[in-house]
Picture (cartoon, rainbow, N blue to C red):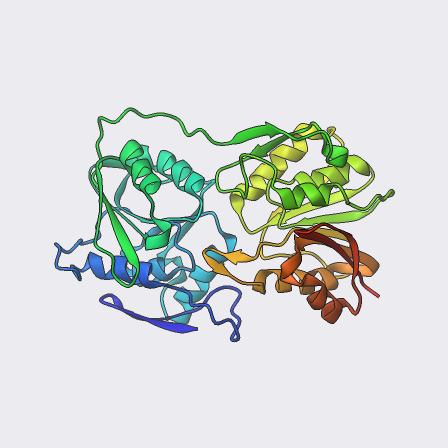
Length: 385
């Protein structure tokens, strides 16, 4: 937990799920800069939130919590961000219903009077979000974006300019920067180019030549990433009524491959990204028959999966949390997999060789073998004894 001090007040904040040993904060200088700017903290005119306040891309609820008195609408692609927001509101004695949380898949408000955008890591996700919100923005809407300097590029500003209106940036403060955008109602309204679809190569096992759907924000949305490609070539060959989990499913290509290779399997696709789970469902439905059995869950890893109910977990764990490099997500996935697996059940993981996942898996499962490897990636298997 950490304490954010702004002109709106002081707030105790934590990421979700809360981990006292996690050194990463639930807010950064970009959040702080934006909140202070609303009260004229940089010498500009104060912005008095009124009407509908929309907070987009709030990473751990810092912005929504600080602005709870204005009853904002929070729009996010992250299940964990929504949970963190609710927890942080409660933690600070605020009404949990003061913030209306929407996913990026939900219909946005019809009218937005103050639009605050925390610039995401994915330029594609930003593009899709701005397209979705453009109809709600009017001539009097105040639009302010925020991000760390390393997150804001010329391409970022061009998106605001092309979709919303004339755009400028602030000076940098604590390596953070603000984006000021003036809505131009005369701009032509064009549809979002997302989702994208592409055909898989012919050397990736059961899904060779199949078409994958990618909504905005999915990792490597325009092509198959090399780690997943390596994993697809080395997936286990199994038959029978297995319960398989594609953990951190992204566009669902791994779970779909497992389903095609074993039509008797039931596959559960899990990700904390709403865009990912939507992509996985479209990928699966487009490539399997009407009787194929699958479940699609947006959630915190395997926390909603009953213990000892799974035969096989397949995962390509992320090793970034926004801009921070961390193995915390992978560790959580590994512990969750052990709890969810039946005796004799297996976890198969692909990862960059340098991440050293084998050490963690041996500590958690008591065993780990290398199934395949190349100079960059390894596929590992751990069995629940």
